[in-house]
Amino acid sequence: VSNRLPIVLKWNEGRWVVKPGSGGLVTALAPVLSRNGGIWMGWPGTYEDEDVQDPLREFSEEQGYWLHPVPLDYEDVQGYYYGFSNEILWPLLHGFHTRCNFDPAYWDKYKKVNRVFARNLLEATAEDDYIWVHDYHLMCVAQELKQFGGQRRIGFFLHIPFPGPETFLRLPWRRQILSALLDFELVGFQTHEDMDNFVACLKSLCAEFHRENSDSLITVTCGAKTVKAGCFPISIDFDEFSDQAATKEVSKRTAKLNLLHPDQQIILGVDRLDYTKGIPER
Image 1 (tube, rainbow, N blue to C red):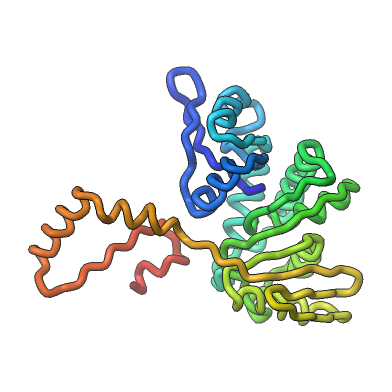
Image 2: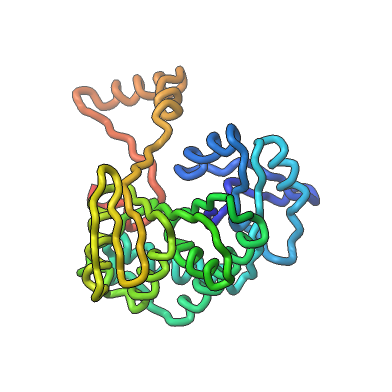
């Protein structure tokens, strides 16, 4: 389960055309699902009144796993995605709390969309399925699923940093988010620092806090809730990048650049124009 499906839909000559998506999550998980089967649930990038079932079905049959679109309306996307996810969680979790826009209306939309995802999960899965929820857009899905009475094994993985208490506690909805994360069976992070920051935030807000360490996981109990936390770093597809760098086209261009800038080392960066990327600093 992720905010977006692993595809891009484009309207072309009177019909929807489906193309594979890009990015770390798609690169890592699409091959796994292709080999083993399963369902990928997410927003298709279109709105509720646009029928995309047929092209998604054709893509699913080719790839070996099924796409389950979660329809959202325009206002929900503005409040949940562009609002709470991008104007609050994205800057806060990256440590840029001064860039946050703590609009209460965003929280209402975030909860509503997480509830929509939970309802779709309840309809599309069975009790013996394992549900794997990805990233900061969907931190409340497990909690919403339980409120519907759904019993599912469900884990969560965060693809971006998790800050320490000095930053995270600036979030007006800090208790609600941490309580929601405690409703997952397992919460995964990119680094040990992120995991330790998560545990420190729980400890700072929970009166009945207990922690147990095992070889690879931490078990944290806060009152009546218990969650396992672990560090499971994901990387880029090294082989794909290496193969692209070794092509004749790249080699020729590299040779020309080296002639223009002798005795210098050239470093290439390819980034989104986002303040978290540190482009001016570099």
